[in-house]
Amino acid sequence: MADIRNIVVLTGAGISAESGIDTFRSAGGLWEQHRVEDVATPQAFARDPDLVLRFYDMRRENIQKAQPNAAHAALARLDQHWQGNLLIVTQNVDDLHERAGAQRLIHMHGEHLSAWCLACDGRTRWHAPLFDRPGCPHCGEAALRPDIVWFGEMPYRMDEIDRAISQCDLFVSIGTSGAVYPAAGYVRTARHYGARTLELNLDPSQGSIMFHECRMGRATDLVPAWVDEMLTHQADWL
Ligand code: OAD
Image 1 (cartoon, rainbow, N blue to C red):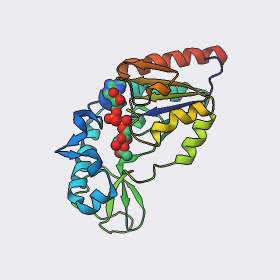
Image 2: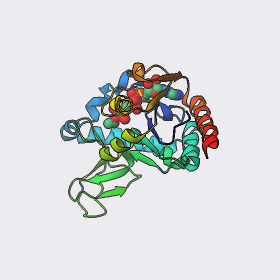
Image 3: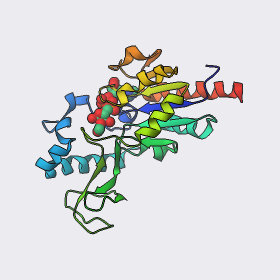
């Protein structure tokens, strides 16, 4: 504990579960009998754009009704008070971390509230449906897609994430099943560079064995308690 200054936190769907947003692999990973992987690919969008746009319109609407929970609030508190380096890397495409107040944040899998124009490459804050093919505010073309990283596409801001992981003293994984790479490999990278590693999750993830310490329980219990520990620890070295 004594030498922890730089922290990377990775979050997944489990941190938003208690805000009422379904995790990916709950309900067997099915949505209207489609495997989630079958709607979250560029091939699915090419084959059946109505299906894919409907799926994301529904999720975009749901996240706007949800509220950040105590785990999001605790990470925002850590962000506000932690004097060392901190990076929150989320795989989530909801905006609950930023609505709770977190700022040192990367959405590695994109964002529901952003639309990406395939005609002009512009990105626009977006709250409405895409199913009815609205025009792009930049170029007017009806070529908007969800600004979400689909399977087979490159996650965002990988260089910044890799740099932060290679320099962190503590890597913490919260509410993710460890099923999807590259995020699932971050614990291994962090250990390679000598970081301490901690998992906070409801159940053991696929990568649990890689962590120095695992705490099992609900994010709204575990995360505030861990943040309290970190801020108490910080008071010792400030
Ligand atoms: P998953 O649905 O795979 O895993 C959610 C994890 O959260 C599981 O390990 C649960 O045990 C845990 N969990 C559930 N409720 C919890 C709670 N209240 N407190 C703490 N933990 C809880 O979601 P992700 O790991 O985030 O990618 O999925 C990773 C990626 O796969 C997603 O970002 C998405 C998906 O396909 C893309 O869209 C590119």
